[in-house]
Image 1 (cartoon, helix red, strand yellow):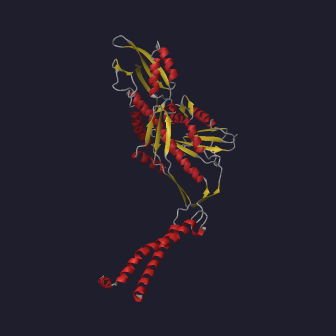
Image 2 (cartoon, chains in turn brown, green; image 1 turned 180 degrees about the vertical axis):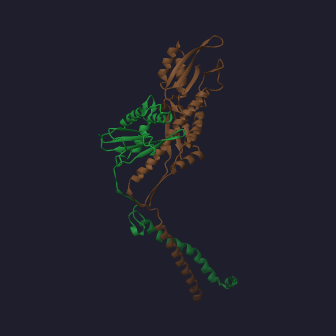
Image 3 (cartoon, chains in turn orange, yellow; image 1 turned 45 degrees about the horizontal axis):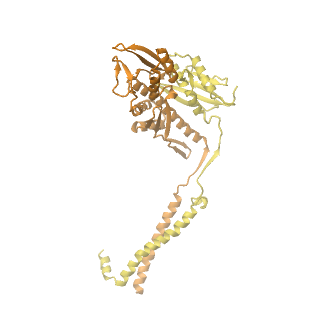
Length: 261
Length: 184
């Protein structure tokens, strides 16, 4: 017992010391590598520069969104997609605004995202963070939601890095912003539908025009009295946006016509 | 290896029991050692407890000189000015595109007036703005300068120049703005 007991205790003591050593080393490493932050920023303007970069990114997102809203509105109004299908054409040319398309918000959203991506990707940026944002927009569709009057968009992938001596600031904001159609002088299609239904009861073209101009201030209105093949008269309403939009080479207005049902 | 098994075979019953006793003992000792170290370490790493040379101290960012600059929001103001409606729902940005792209349908003087109108909306006491549109550093005369409350024809050298590029078709239009303290 005394001889074998001595041999066992030496091994055990050795093992205990090894554990002690390993534990101490691990704890020392833990202390030294903790997430302590200590920096000296010589000039607080580094943060201004970071926020300025975010403002620039937001400016281009807003610019692309404005162009995308114009294109989307023009596509939908030009192809009468705001009317619930099947679209009935009077005299084979004038679409009857019988009912608002039940899928309009979804259609607007899908087209807006495609147009937004196309617009944003055409910018010839030189800054790295904006190029990376373009890549993020190209690879991942931005989230968007349209409620009939405004479109809300969330763009992810912006990463701004600024270095100042040994300090590096990394800022990854998520850009979430809304754009109202009214801001661009456009009216929601539901408002156009409601206004056309209210004003169609007026007796003549002038009264219809003044009624619609009051309800749709973003558009110039023209009401033209026409005759069906069966000699019955109807009014063709034409809306022309007061605001002009830049369409790549020239400024254009949005123009579309319908017959109130 | 063979030696180990030979010795194991020769191990007495008492020795087997002793070895088996040390297995849970090792776990207990390790636990005690961890507890002995972790508790003091958690106390020591509380903010301000451990000396700085040993990795302690609060998280801190020291800002040596805070310069309250008048142009802290200048870029935001420039973007605001570009989005101000200046004529029949057209923004200053639209007018700049019209001036640059559409074969000068809009004259330099007209654009200057529109820019002045937008800058006037930014005007604050003791804070004026100078805007330079279309300056590319090459065509020295092919740009428009506008200002509010400042009677200068060029950008002041002492002020920071804030810049935005407007992409219109294949063209890039440079728009710069500076903020100055001395209004005339």
